[in-house]
Length: 145
Image (cartoon, rainbow, N blue to C red; front, side, top):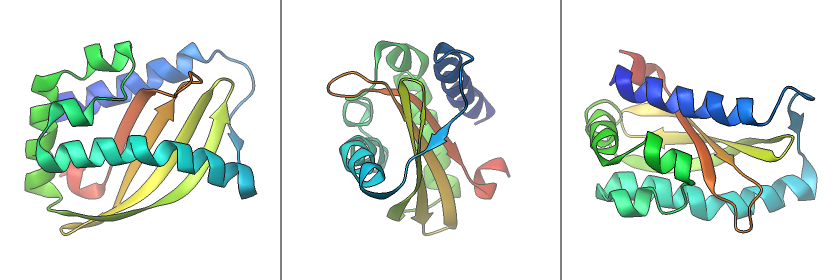
């Protein structure tokens, strides 16, 4: 479990470091926020549906190459087992925030599971067309127990 969390945190950090040391994150609001969130939602669906179905190909279909290498099928299976044991069944999600850091977009979701009422998922997307997931991070008090 700690290995998975460490891997996810490293991938997020690597993505942020690749963005450079320029300006900090910019929070996006209004119609632009809605556009970014709408673009990220199918990618978030893929991640969530892949975990629910225990299907790595669905889970990783929008990953960039670094994510595919950093979060392989073995790590995915450990993630699924951890979610099943600590979070329960997925219920819903809402967008908490959308930010940009240079050429990366961070969409943060609040997710609800049967055993965890507040799980945070952060998707870091690159600026490719279509965007790819270049960072993924989950946090919940239940995952730290």
